[in-house]
Amino acid sequence: MKIYFTWLYGILMIAAGINHFVRPYFYKTFIPDWLPLLPVNYISGAVEIALGVCLLIPGYRHDAALGLLILMVLFLPLHAVDVFKENPAIGSKLLAYIRLPLQFVLIWWAWIIFQGIEQ
Image (cartoon, rainbow, N blue to C red; front, side, top):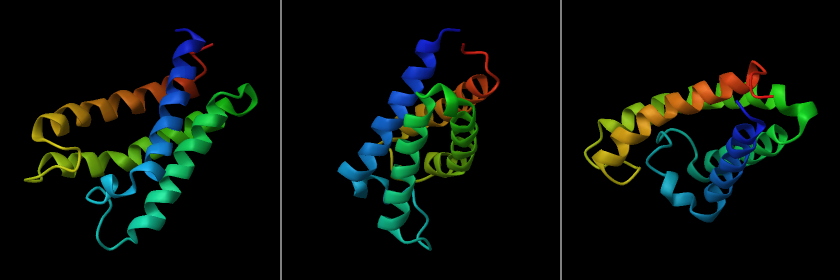
């Protein structure tokens, strides 16, 4: 694998994190009702941005990949629940069905980077 895939993942996470600030209410139905919506949304966006940036810096790449691996595993139940909602947060049932396996790809991708295979 090439380092380009690591950079692609980092940029993807930075863009996803920025989206938390640009479209905060898009994530409303992903966030459980018992959590404060905007603080959780902004914190998760900031974490995605920080980990994405750190993934681009060789000295921080290993730790950032571990952080992304953990974050993607933590997000997995949210996407799994979304598949079973009448009106999925992602927009449609089809998108929810596509998004769920994509989460496993993101987990695997972070694992590959963490293992140092992407050099």
